[in-house]
Amino acid sequence: MGFEILPWHWVVFGLGLAIFEIFLTTFFVLWFGAAALIVGAVLYLQPELALSWQILLWTVLSSILAVAWFKFLKPLSIDRTMAGLSKEQIIGEVGQVVVVPNGDKRGKLRFPAPVLGDDEWIIISQEDLALGDRVSVIDVSGNSLIVKKA
Image 1 (cartoon, rainbow, N blue to C red):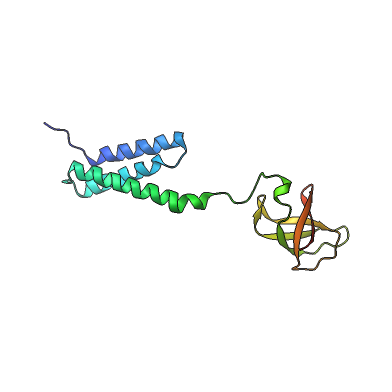
Image 2: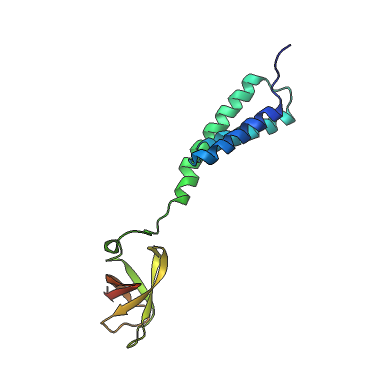
C-alpha cells in the first residue's frame, strides 16, 4: 500500500508556506505557497496526475511567480517619496506655484512627485511670484518651504 498525494495535501502545504511567510515578511516564500495551492487545484481537476508531474508543475510555477514578484510587482511597492530624509534632500527641488503668497498670507507649491511624503507644500518667498511660476526650494522653515524663482 503506497502513499498517494491528494489535492488537500498541496492546499495544506501551500497554506503552511503562506503562514510561514507571515513570520518571514519577505514575500518570497508566499509564491511557493501560491504555486502549491495552484497544484492542489490542478490535482483536484486532474486526479490521475503523477507525483513527478505535480512536483515539476510546483517547481515551474514557484519559479515563475517568484521571478514575476521581483521583476514586476516588487518595484511597484518601493517608496519614492523621500519621507524621513533630512532637509538637505528637499533643497533644490523644483515645483510650481498653485497659490500665490500675498503679504502675510503664505502660498502653496505643488511638486510633480511627492517630496517628503506630500506633493503640495506651504511656501514663503521674498520675491513676487505669479500663479504657475516654477520655484526652487532654498530652505525649510518649520512646515513651510522657503523658495525663489527657478
